[in-house]
Amino acid sequence: MKRWLPFVKSDPTVAVVRLAGAIGLSERAGLSDKALAPILERAFRRGKPDAVALEINSPGGSPVQSSLIGSRIRRLRDELDVPVVAFVEDVAASGGYWLAASADEIYADESSVLGSIGVISSGFGAHVFLARQGVERRVYTAGKSKSMLDPFRPENEEDVARLKVLLDDIHQNFIAHVKARRGGKLDDEKDLFTGEIWLAAKAQDLGLIDGVGHLVPMMKRRFGDNVKFRRYGLRRPFWQRFGAQMIESTVAGIEERAAFARFGL
Image (cartoon, rainbow, N blue to C red):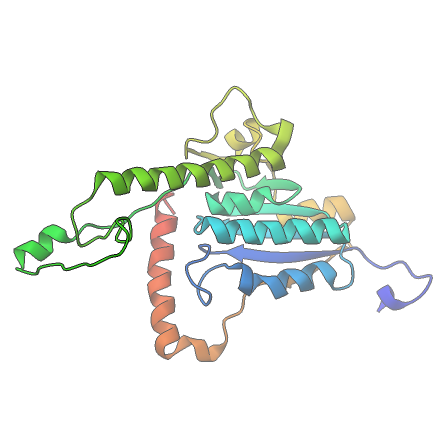
């Protein structure tokens, strides 16, 4: 109420946006720009917060969705002049670190895993299994690269070479984002872009984060003990737990679990 009364100083407010899970697995399960757009808009615009804090716990995912979400955060930050501070929980790796780097400052727990500034593509080859079962794969295309990386056909060296070019280009986009956001804070003597991961103390030494710290105590030190927290995050409607949505969420959950497991989590 004080915020709307003239001549009465309002308590400072921090909007807390939770970004937890893999990025871009699907619109219903995982983080996507479409799902987060209204949440981020409310967080930045409602009552002109003194800061927006990002709670990040993500092993990564889609580079495009990571870029879209990060760009939206930066646009809102610049348009509304609201500082953004990221707080990493278990992991901010790959696309998760892309999101963290979109903030003005990054802090983490001592045991948080950070980095993995690289790009990965994985899949399976089933052509041997099909051949043993007596199944013949028939594919007809217009354009010699149309069936690129077909998992039911033997791997083609030209397809792999094309894929590596794409991965290298995406990697360069990732590197450019990190360098643009972290600037002179990065350690120039260390190659930070090999996909390696680090715990918080080492990540701080390398300039990937600004320090070790937790959200509530750090925001209280910055804005005082009377600071108010408004929380925002994805909420899955009750009806989506059933039917096809439940199956989709289950599959996405398995994929997400596998993504976290890459970092020992």
